[in-house]
Length: 88
Image (cartoon, rainbow, N blue to C red; front, side):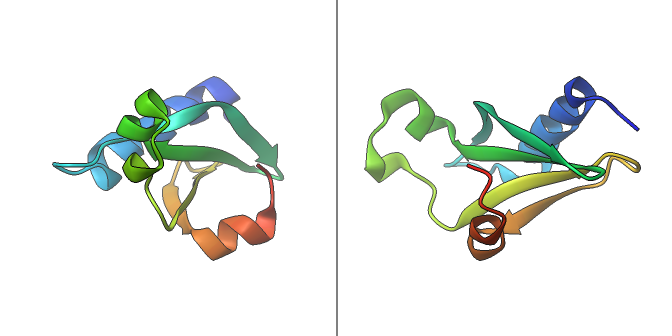
């Protein structure tokens, strides 16, 4: 089982390589992570919003990043699935 530091690195790399695109880059929200079972969950948001706090820069509809603590596989959850988990 990996530790939270490794899961954090994998989650940010996933955002950089698979989720961010020209016009909107994503980052993990500092202090917003939880381990549940063998998975790690991270809140994320657009870098622009995290810098400005301006709601016009906010990403809407994105959910948590989930990292499988056994395999390292990462996936983005939808907003509804994330809300049902209710971690943050």
